[in-house]
Image (cartoon, rainbow, N blue to C red; front, side, top):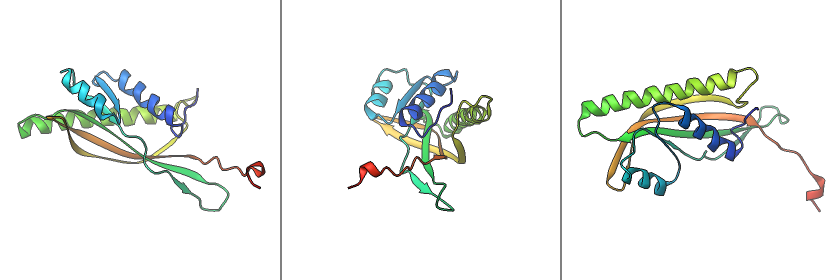
Length: 161
């Protein structure tokens, strides 16, 4: 079945499936600080994938009849921040490797036959990331990327008086 990340529920479920199937990710959170605080308190943090809702969607067009929607999206792979800087570097490298695993899987899904993922992906950027939940600082790697999908813009005269 072909999936489009432009559908909000598919977006969440696709990344949940990636997190659940990656051997190094122990938790998945979709922009829910309460859930993240609960995971941290449970002492079962491990590596967590924190998925952001996609940001403002932009309509793009070059010839006025082929609009596409461009979606800026992001997720972070993180764990409890170690006290030593050298350990932070090691944690970042581990989290970056997971981010690259996920990008590789997304590309494989996009290129597979029959297509699993029918969303074009581009503009990958990743960097170290920090966040604090309660008293627990997290450290890891954040990936920001863009995906596009055809815009469903159909004039419906019944909607106009």
